[in-house]
Length: 203
Image (cartoon, rainbow, N blue to C red):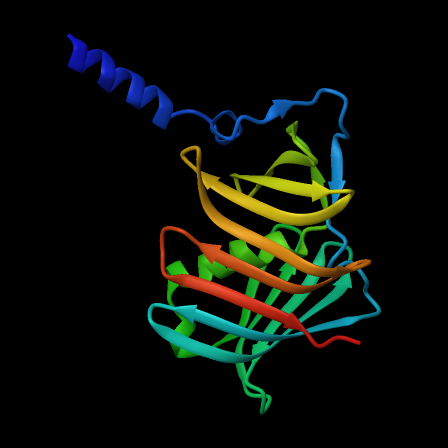
């Protein structure tokens, strides 16, 4: 009987939501919409020195993100010599692979990259729930039917967490922020061996 009760308690804890596990406090007064400003200027080419480590393979080069229009971005990863590794177009909820190198041309990897870059470029998000934690404001949103939590510190977006089954699945870290430019971005996956590091060279 005691073992059964312990098992039920552990099951309930494991099935709890991410905010509950993190002890976030619900904030009913917060905004119902949030903005991600980091790739929102259509007059800029956002250029980052990039490394992608995936499946024990290392790729280095330049990542260029360009806003073409409303809800429309182009994401291109090249070698420093200018040879394309992949080239994606995002238009609202549509996604197109313009080019991809064989090493990246795996359905599961393309889908992961699609989800990751969609988080980076999505500007306006509807808030499902709002929370607070010490000095941070946290907003629960939905991208591609996955729960994402946006962390703002003094109105500056510093982190995004994608969750799965109430646990952190992917962490997006924004640092060395200058106005509407995140000079460093890291994307760290928990369930697969994938890490993306970006360092801005945009003037």
